[in-house]
Image (cartoon, rainbow, N blue to C red):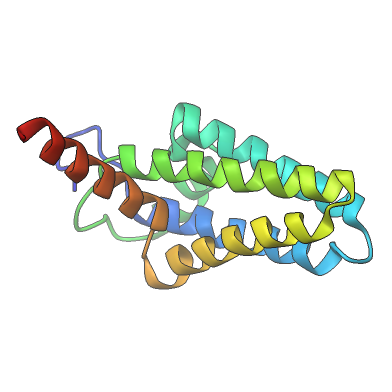
Length: 151
């Protein structure tokens, strides 16, 4: 949890996860009948994840949409969040989106479906329950790194 000016509104990544959830749902629904379309959809999502991993989730199109259209209609957040864990989560999502895109584009539809389904589940957990798997992976990595350096 961040309390300084560099923190982000934790509702922003949840909003982004809700959009991501819809994107992967559409890709999965189309994957059998139109794997090429599913490849384009997951490819676009990969680009969005790359922006989030590189610049931060608040710089993605969905992050900007949240900041300019949604957040002004909400009360201020109780706390701000460290942007590093959501940024890491975007990098993890990027890996799954790239694998899904490759799977759909090359005819390995089952590979694409598995990768897209895993990303769908992660987005669902974040959007609905505010449980960010990528963020938890980041925090676990920090704990393991600190434990390893203390030994």
